[in-house]
Image 1: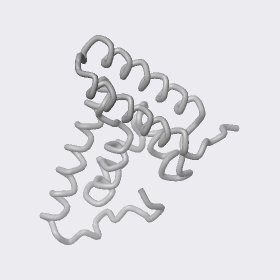
Image 2: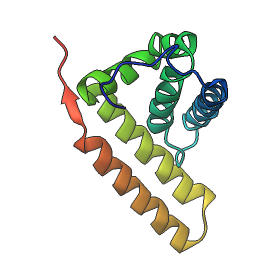
Image 3: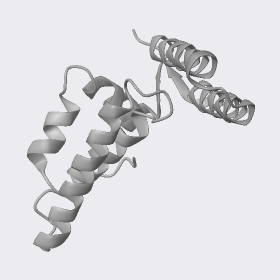
Image 4: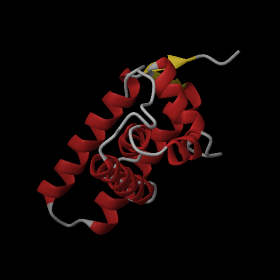
Amino acid sequence: MTQEEPTFGRQSNRIRRFLFLMAGTVSLGLGLLGIPLPLLPTTPFLLLSAYCYARSSERFYNWLLNHRIFGEHIRNYRDHGGTTKKVKVGSISLLWITITISAVFAVDLLWVRLVLLVIAIGVTTHIASLRTIRRQ
């Protein structure tokens, strides 16, 4: 998400605002599904929701940015382009735990296990490459 200011009220096209609102809501739903599902990423969908809500609804945008669980993470990414070390460690740990459990107990095909491994390596690389925000 860019550093630009939200465009509340500047969208004269009601259909466009409605489409952004619906896209933000669908994206939020996918992000929530990504919490328990290891292959569905949560953060990109939440960031997309914030982007869409910023272009459609001041109320939904403020709700998401002030959400007690998601708000700080979205603001950190938006304002600083990164996340805290604690979030990185937690995300990578949870990723590897769920991928390992899935690969060992839920998948019998070798090629699917290899795909899971490649995905886990890719996501780990991406999370590790994010800027680490140090808290005062």
